[in-house]
Each structure stands twice: as structure tokens, then as C-alpha cells.
Amino acid sequence: MRTFAKIFAILFVLAALGAGAYALYRLFSGVSGIGTPATPITAPVRSTTETLSPRVKALSQQRIFDYWVDKATNAIYLVTLDGKIFRTFGDGREEEVAKQTLPGLHRVEASPTGTHALARFNYPGLDTMAIFDTATRSWARLPEGTFAATFNPAGQLLAYLRRTNGRTALFTLTLATGKTVEIAALAASDGDLRWVGDTILVVPPPSAQIRTPALAYDTVKKTVRLINAGAMSLSDAQSGNGLRMYAENGASAELFLANASLTADLRRLSFLTLPAKCAFGGQTLYCGIPKNFPSRVTLPDDYLKEKFLSADTLISFNIENGKNDTLLLLGDDTAPVDAIYLAVKGKQLLFKNRYDEKLYAFELPQGKK
Image (cartoon, rainbow, N blue to C red):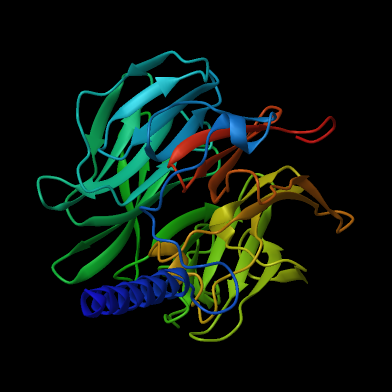
């Protein structure tokens, strides 16, 4: 009997040691060096309006890919993860406004007025770009071979790049009439388009590993020049401002305030974030600033590949005097915010929270808009 008791005791001790070792493994295996753990995108969701802040509210319970605001009607258009389009005014009422579902979404961009939107998606299994008209609630596909497009600052024209038979050409499309004109042949096979003033930029995909310069096409002089758009950038034609993030694979990143055409840096910013986590509202820059980044992270690549989620503080930066203010500081006892796709709408700062992929509105303080 005593022998059986000794064996049972030994087995109990071994089991306890094994459980303790497994617990330690679980505790430390998810930490990627010093800084924020590299949390997977499927991590348990804690973000709710009650735990964020009284000044933050969810505008919809839909999980979204992206969104835009129609400035003519003040309506918000939601693009869900499964490619459906809904319209909401943030009061709980939602209406599906398009019959066509967009499979394999890559990108959504609204016109400056918000009356039209571009979408790049796979249909039916092919890379496709189309324009959505909020007035007619209809889609119009761009020609086959189109891989990049953007609106002019007035929202009346569309520029797009189309590749056919190994040749890439730049076109303009008049939205009101449907008239298309080829304006230039460019040596480009990938990237995004931006229209700033009289310049159309062909910006390479955001990455610290791509050294390809951006192309700047002058629509008046009909000339092309090369510029350095950095590893990731943001251009705001309305305010005339931009952001450039410089980063090399494995090296520390830096963020600079620039002009909208990305031809000149104005100042190095004291904080670090991704341009995709910022928006301009007049002469104020709003950003979600990660409290820290995982160690050995490559920006912007690892963030865009959703290898980690950040825990942000929302700040405003005054472009004229260089002062930045904290708008929303979340503590350890509140749900985290990973803000992306920021936009200023009246007295609200809108953003998508990557933790639950929902759209939120933050009430700006008096005098901030």
C-alpha cells in the first residue's frame, strides 16, 4: 500500500511540473522581444463602446473593409469584409445600396466629394477596377488591364493606368461624359495613383524592401520626373500637405511632414506612426500613435500584413506651430484601439479599429476640427 502511495505521489509531482512548464511556455511564447506582443488579427475582441471611452462610439456593428463619407449628403458608406456596400448616418439605420458583391477586395478610394468611389477586387477571378456612383447606386467597370486609378482634386476626372500587350499608358476619364483620353505612356507595372494639383503621382506599393522611385507626371508640361516617396506616404491635395515615412528593411523608421506632391520634406516629426494611420483636417494632422512596436519589426510591411496589432493613442498635430496634443489616451483597463483609415467628419474623427474591424467616431474637443 505504501509503495502504491509513493508511486501516486511521484506521478502527481511529475504532472504538476509538466503543467507548470506548459504554463510558462504559454506565457512567454507569444512575446516578440521588447514592446507590444505580436498579437494575431484573430485575437479575442475587447473593443466596445463602453470600454473605449464615453467620447467614442461605434457607428455600425458591421465588420468593414473600408468606408467613405459622401460630403454632399453627410452619409457614410460602409464596405463590408464580404464586399457589400451599406449606407448609414451613424444612428443605427443601415441600408444596402448595391446589388453587386465585390469578392477579393484589394482597395477602396473615394472621390474628394465622396459622390463616387473606386474599388479594386477580383471578379470573376480577374483583377478588376470599377467606379461606384452614389447617385445612381451603380457600378461602372474600368477597361480590362487597369491596375491603378485615382480622382483629381475636384472629383470630376479620373486618372487610370492600363497595361495591354506589355505597354502601360495613363488615361483620364471625364465622369460626367465618359470621355477617355490617353495622355502618356509610362514605365510602370504596379503601384497606386494620386492626383495633386497638376501632378499625377505613380507611387510604388508601400514597403521598406522596395527601392523603386515614384513617377511624377506634370499634366501641364507633359513631363515625367522621379521622386522619392519613401517606404510609405500620404498625400492630401485639399490641405496641400503630405507624409513620408522613410524605412529600410531591418532599420528604424522615421516620419516626415512633407508637401502633398512629396517633393520636399518640411520637418521631421517627433512621433512615429504609419501614414495610413493619419488624416489631415485643414492645418491639423490627426494620427493613431502606437505606444510601442514589436521588436525586430519591419515597417510598414509587417503592419500591412497584419502580423501585429498596435495599441494607439490618438493625437492632433498643429502644422503651423508644431505642437501636438493627446486627444485620447487609453489605459491598461480599457479596450485597445488600432486606428486606421482616419477621416475628419464635422466635429468627429472617424476611424476603423483593427481589433474588431468596426467603424468608430471620436468626438473632437471644442475648437478641433
